[in-house]
Image (cartoon, rainbow, N blue to C red; front, side, top):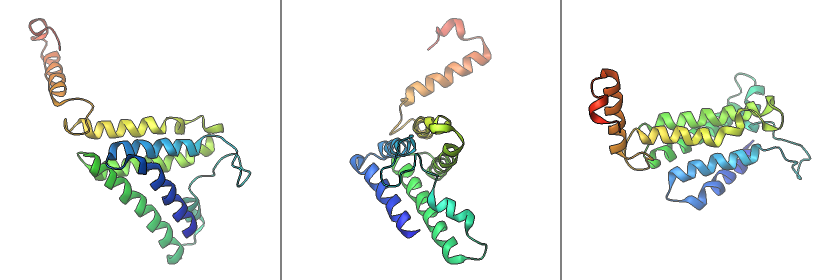
Length: 177
């Protein structure tokens, strides 16, 4: 299991390294690389057609209760993934990096298992990179600051427009956005 862990974090580091200093792009690159792993293709080293999910997550299901050594390895592995995603979220400037990091982890974990139920990765995992980008955009756009796709002024105009539509009296005078 420790070899699987080292291999996974080697893959992770390789996926994000080209974008050092740009945490937002690192998150995007991580999920793009994840999607590349999930795509249906023959693996020359094992002869299988697709991965069967997270090796350590699969092992966790089989570990008997009370086996603290093996359970601890899996817990440590998942804790490291969580820590890394939260760190990237914080560096990207997320308003609540713990929530973004955890949401990205849930997305990643769910992706492992939906791949098993949809043939040739045609299900939800096909949208994982887009979903990760959407989570990041929402977390950053609400800041109206760094990393945001929508400038603060545009967000303020949208909020004013929304308020004017609610009252109905300003529509004709302002002419929209």
